Image (tube, rainbow, N blue to C red; front, side, top):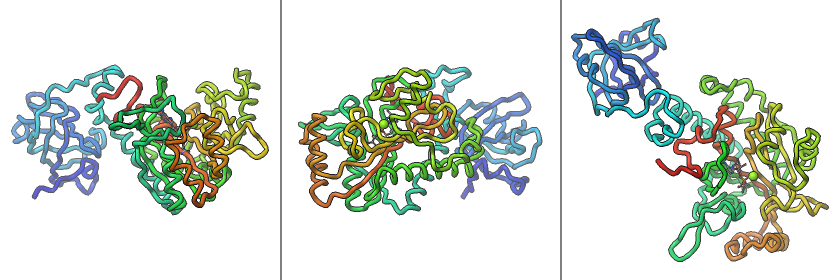
Length: 429
Ligand code: 4AD
Ligand code: MG
């Protein structure tokens, strides 16, 4: 049986002189009448193979096109001139499939690249981002595992909105109305009564009508819910989590960070505690900077930018006005206008990465707030039940995976951080 090697495995001194078998795709091809150069790509990387006239693979190598799927046999050689110091002296080459002329050529427009996203996934940049994303998610999971959280899987088809009606996608669910979930929070609150500390990484859907570099209509949402935590415990936990993941990336993913133009040192500096401002203090800070905003208004991306332009660590803003936050957040003690919650803004104007809060856990208070916000109670009967059978104080938060990746990997647009981005004007491919 053929032993297949990965490209990155063979770029080593101890492989020099050995005969290896590789399979993958043609990344580059160039030939003269005497020699054919094929750069082969697999999931791990690229390496150049040289087929001299007279070797069995020469004719096949001469007659290939970019992105054809191939297998090759050859001997590993050390070569100072080769891009990474090694190349393959090709012996045999066979096609699995000879590709049509690849449609992505030099200087493609962004919208064309989005149209052929299914083909563009194989680019070096997306390949690296997919791996970066996978590593980042695994660090989040490690963090939760170390703290003995349970990972759960919530439903995505629901009948209850979480974050207000304006961004709900509704669908015809046989004879009933259902929605694609905006957040798994309410279900996490139910799981919490069984497992105490729970989290999930699941899609959330928002019918966002705005075209911005920070909004997807389908994004991956990391959400956690903790029994017995108050607002302060919740904020401290979020700071530790972000620091843990940023530091792990700085330690273990230096090359990838640098590839994306992020200095690993930036992420090493992310350590708790972060700067914390109350909403009211943040408004004052903006007004001092002569930026137009009144108490009671929500922050736009200009405000977020002004608050985080010159800071190295994320910024916590806590206790927002009740009227701009959802029904489930409890009032601050002695205050009727503000609620116990927090957002975290990433540095450098990357915007909000986390929204969290204490949850109303007393039945009467919840009923009053549902009333005040004119929420139809029918879809929330089960949620109300949770306040009738052993309700406990608890808190939680949600973090947008693509928002965090945009910040950590220094990306201009959120679409760069996910395989198939969904936005207001795109659900294809
Ligand atoms: O602030 P949000 O709306 O909060 C909630 O959904 C809570 N129920 C979460 C919870 O407490 N369990 O969303 C949380 C985070 C935001 O901070 C942002 O990072 C991300 O989700 N987010 C989006 N990411 C990409 N595209 C969008 N359209 C997003 N909307 C929110
Ligand atoms: Mg929010």
